[in-house]
Length: 96
Image 1 (tube, one colour):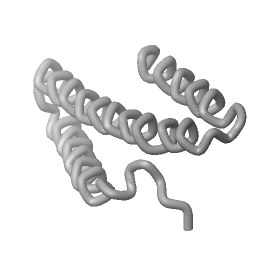
Image 2 (cartoon, rainbow, N blue to C red):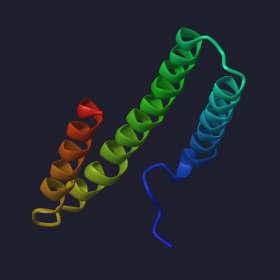
Image 3 (cartoon, rainbow, N blue to C red):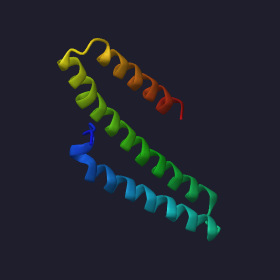
């Protein structure tokens, strides 16, 4: 099995994602209970920020582990490929 950049912090990422999952379930209850629109939107914003935080953490791990490892290994073009992947991921995050 390949070790990913986030493997060391996997349990932290899973905890954060479970919290987001709980936030989303809370949002479902809020809609089911006909809560005030602005209150629901506030919670949507909080869940979105939490997911963005996970994404930034994963990106950081990718750069520190995958990209840095490829650069240190000196595999021709591998670091550039991984940087291109990271750049596309950042682009998707910015546009979301």
